[in-house]
Length: 411
Image (cartoon, rainbow, N blue to C red; front, top):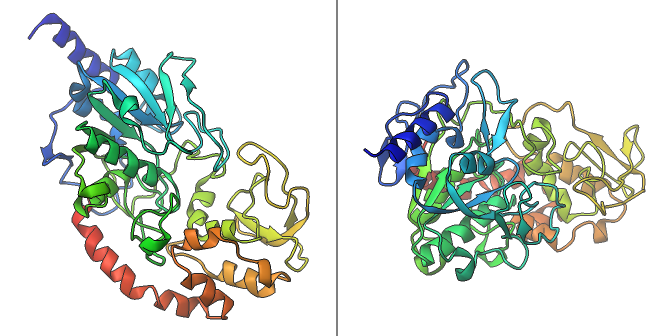
């Protein structure tokens, strides 16, 4: 072993706080079998894939690296909590990893942009590395943008909802890498809504960037597991197969409560918002506000077209909502900040809002069908079907999905 390689390995071990260990792998899956299907671990801290430097830095040595990253792509410091961290790009550069390009998904590399806002290409002022947007017209990295790369790293914190677009970005990056014979390294992170699956299965005729695959609204998978399902179900164009390696989390299973120390996007500020998001995001396809333009995003709902109540809010422009729905108008509705943690989709709020609205004719917009993944849900609500009966209509689809999903689970 030469001096350069010895120095590199020493750096890896020191930087990963003693976590340098042998890599456990099986057909491109790096997994700890002792945590699969285990009971919730309460005392041990969850170690995200990015922190397991000893397992993946050797895979990046002497490689030209591209990385899909945003503000959640961090390496945590210390073992007591996740309050301190460094961005993975800064960390890898300090370890002499040759990062050539950063690919930025929705909300941008630093996570400041509105939902749906155009993200421009540029350079990271801290490292000088080129940043390429993969949101907007350029959702799939072009051949020219991948040219010269030996491997692409994907490290994004997801929240487990079909319409949260990071899994759509995952699909397009996998597809581009498969077509250009570039392997992918996926650094897994816990799914804060991974403890359940629920909702209608998307019909492919309603496929869009907020829903690309025939899965329920709440899919119950981590990014690493989801990537394996994309491959296994042959969802990439021309049924291509992407060469992926997943670095799993330690001390994590689906029932492990996991608090996100960094906002995954500007309008998901805390654990309550993240838990309510799959249920409240349906309001994005209606005239009801889910709290954008307030400091209670996805923890409240309201509209000028709902009856006056003791609770109200007035949306105003803020970070992540430059032009909020019902800007400067009083919205009446419901405060859900003290709601108990959900382990299923709540349709009561959507159904009640429709029934009480004075603008039923214009209550839904075209975006609702994309969020629901079908036209049926809007029809069911408009026809007065109860939330309980609507849920029954999902039962068969969920059973089939859960049978498919179990083949790709790592935890």
